[in-house]
Image (cartoon, rainbow, N blue to C red; front, side, top):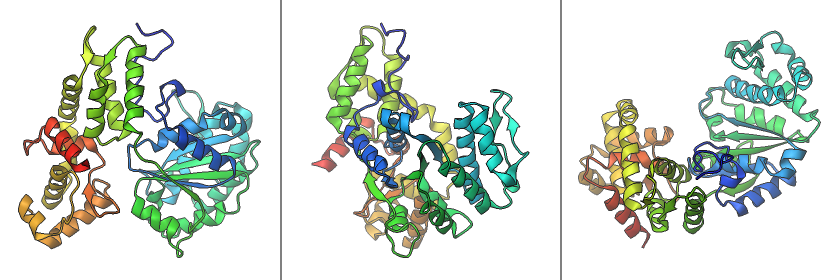
Length: 397
């Protein structure tokens, strides 16, 4: 029986995970902590759904940070302008300050001279909300200056984590990198963690001498949690709740989703909740749960594909079937998958990369970071989960 103080399910799907249910990442946590404590701005790169956000929140929860710093986290993946960036940052600061009382919150609101009188009360919480509309941020650079000035006057050093930072490269204002860099380099009480998933864009932003953020950070890359460490963690979680898990099944799951943290957690979250009393969670049980998840997601996947052109859909499916696809613009690849002209493949690939539906690694292999979408796309080709597992195993030999 699970203890009353324990959550119903130990496999968290959010990025904020209690320490007792956080798997491994000891070296990465210590590295990130050391860099931040030494006043570095940090560039943290990894594929999506690998656990960047979870690592940052885990580090924020360390006693040294929790007691000695004010921490803020914003995800700008869905932003498209500097105004929306500012809105996200303002909402996070107001949210954190609301928990400290009206004094600190009032000081922040007063510091934003151009936005007075546009704040409202959240009817669900009764707390002030940063509800300023995009059109009301008439002078975004001035508002940004005021926010940063407030952080610099804070009672503690501040850490601002900005997830999916590469999105600023897509903003309509072409000088956002320069705007942010010119201000960030002058801050002494505030450090930044820039995390992102598009390695090629981030490499240009931080590695090109012509870009404003050139060599302005320490860098970290986040890979998969080692299979053995995750397998031991998962087994321990099941055991602590009086349930049984076949460790070899976790290894198979790990290889099937190639170590992507979110998909490991999602499959085990579902399996843990549905495991009947007295039954062992084995590979068959795990894979049945994945099949159920894929079926439940079918409508959203169909909607996603309907927004793509026929060439884009065909290329995405072809890459999913191959797992890691090389030479996608070769006549051999096109013929093998019934694709059109090479020029149309190139156009489709650019679009899918921009949408982050495809990823390209340094070896110029194309693949899907969304492992559940990949497994759903290979169904029509008759590739079962067991067969894809075998293919993944052979590709690593």
